[in-house]
Amino acid sequence: MSSDPMTNDKDLEARVTDLEAHVAHQDSVIDDLNDMTAKQWKLIDDLERRMGDLKSRVADVEDNSQSAPSGDPLPPHH
Image (cartoon, rainbow, N blue to C red):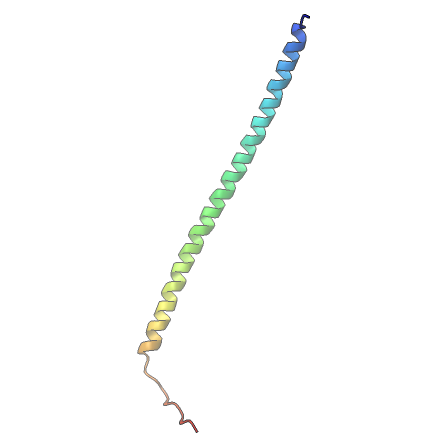
């Protein structure tokens, strides 16, 4: 049984073409995932900054409420 060299070349060329298409698709997926990851890190950094700002504001409100003198005395309870 002899194999046709032209058939082997065509099979090899088809396999290489399929592999190139597969690699191109994987490159595209990797680029998309990289972009998504970068956006998520940016969002996480922003949320961490905002959370820190909110913690500071809550702490300021708590400090001011504890040190603020009472303006009106509490009414007597019946």
